[in-house]
Length: 246
Image 1 (tube, helix red, strand yellow):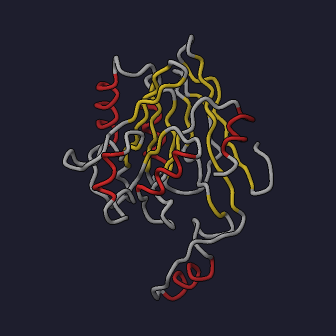
Image 2: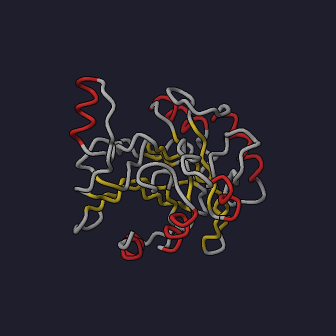
């Protein structure tokens, strides 16, 4: 994250949103880590199915107003369902919904959940960015079409692998099925290769250490026209350690 300020200036990015659910060595997040990320210039942090992995986080999340847990978790869960970021006077609403296909975490319907939060944000936000944290590409794509014209962008996370489908849907919503991970790409989804292969070969349990090589920042850059009220471009941004953005 030491490169974020320079990258933000190079890309002329007005706001930076990051999913931080795996920053605690691949499992959840802590208050200290959340504050560190926010201190690097990140404007808001979203979370996913590993939201409660770290002990005590459920007691800390309410004290961090620019962090939100998935909006379609049960109402009894702590934490905000959305964040509103002031971007040069433009109020940007940000929230995440969890997918339910191939996902084990208890969550309400992401489609109805997104509808409900969008309705709640009417009059509070000038535009909304929606994250869909899900395993199935079909579920992510379907939500993009479902929200076309109602959200600035629908961006997918969770699979750790960036996709090649960045686009603007017909009614003006930017979409990308998965923005990929910021982390080590010489890995199997961020973990050391050998123990993962071993687990596939014989099924025996192993400790999956976080890998360290070929570290990259992976993100989606969304351009938005406030006058036309539609996204104009979505593109994948990849920055390698020691290299530039593209």
